[in-house]
Amino acid sequence: MGNFGLIDLDTPKEAFVKQSYRDGTDWILVFSDEFNTDGRSFYPGDDPYWEAADLHYWATNNLEWYDPAAVTTANGSLVITFSETPNHDLAFQGGGLFEASVQLPGTNNVVGMWPAIWTMGNLGRAGYGATLEGMWPYTYDTCDVGTAPNQTIDGLPVAATINGDHLYNDVLSYLPGPKHTDGSYVGRSAPEIDMFEAQMGGKPPSGEVSQSAQWAPFNQAYHWDNSSANMIVADPSQSRINGFVGNVIQQATSVVTKTNQRCYELVEDCFSVYAFEYKPGYDDAYITWVSDSQVSWTLNAGGVGADEAVQISARPVPQEPMYMIVNLGMSKNFGSVDFEHLTFPNHLRVDYVRVYQPMHSVNIGCDPLDFPTEKYINTHLEAYSNPNLTTWRGDYGFPFPKNSLLETCA
Image 1 (cartoon, rainbow, N blue to C red):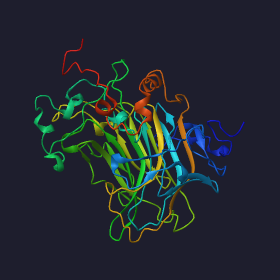
Image 2: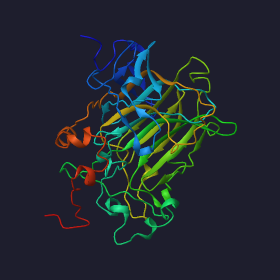
Image 3: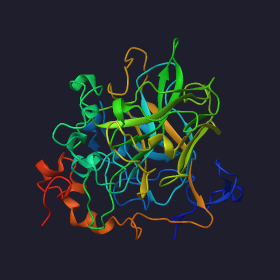
Image 4: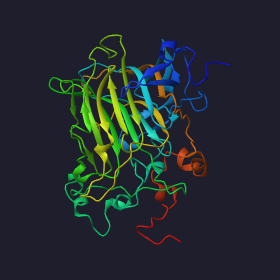
């Protein structure tokens, strides 16, 4: 029958239960992949859980083409080779702890590679722009000006028209307003939580990871409430708030943390554990990130609470079913590229991926009753299967549902 269960037969028994980084309660393993079988293929239909993409990731102006031929398993690890690179998907919902043991590509002092492990709401497909318009990176469930195009109605509030992205005349948002897709009157979207995006920083440069969540609608000037009650940094000597806070298409809550400088493919043969744990919703919701097996920082839900200046309400920590993406790319959007000193090929190696959920609230799958996705995706399958459709309304040709705040809904 093969090793195709949700929990890999090679996962050690001691990994079946893990303590929450938040409160120490037991969380149980609900999915794992140890990648111990060499030579796996990730072309569409070849693997029950992962699929490699075959496309150009134009949204961030990547310099490479994602190709399934660039992904395999070898020596007990998933291996992604640059320059042709894939993305991988898996869906869970209801909060959880996503953990991966990773060896970063290249070396720890040359800029240019963009390895990342991240998650996105299942109603958006990474690289398929039509599915993302009006969906990413919203996480919102209030009918107010936060749902309006550009976060304004008749040019108000003024705070949404100033102190924004200096490349766009200081306007705060160019987003079109979210789609509400399933008739449930619940704000549906494709939010994003990043386990890590690896980079270089400092002088001389050394390895770092940015660990972030992306949000919409946006705070005034993209300034979220990073007070000590909402942004808890475990070790300020290792971590700092990210200088990037947002632009017209996204707001980021992000902290940058130094990596284990040994765990790069051209330095030593070691792996480092990265993770994030989250509880969805409001009030006591949170996201905690882990770098090199140590908590790096925590965002409490109050950090993305209501903002009177731009007249938006609190944004929930993502409640959508989320899938996981592993990718290795290169883009000048993310940072400079030192072609002179980069060596090729580069390899991102993943020893294992494990997902945990609280023992008494396991919720696995991409189509839960309270946040369904399957029927909607199947109804609009062309948008989810054609990466050349870059917009929902233009290329795909479907309108947004009406918004009663802005127009009459018959």
